[in-house]
Image (tube, rainbow, N blue to C red; front, side, top):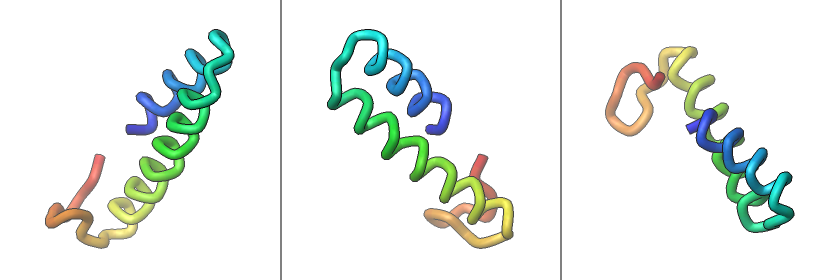
Length: 51
């Protein structure tokens, strides 16, 4: 999810499409939160680890 967010950020920046930029930021933030929760040992969406 983080990688997809970064790809959308780059594509949105290069093509000047603001919606891709916004979606990319949201995906990076959500991916980072899920990654941190999984790393701390909290169950995320019924899974013990989220990678």
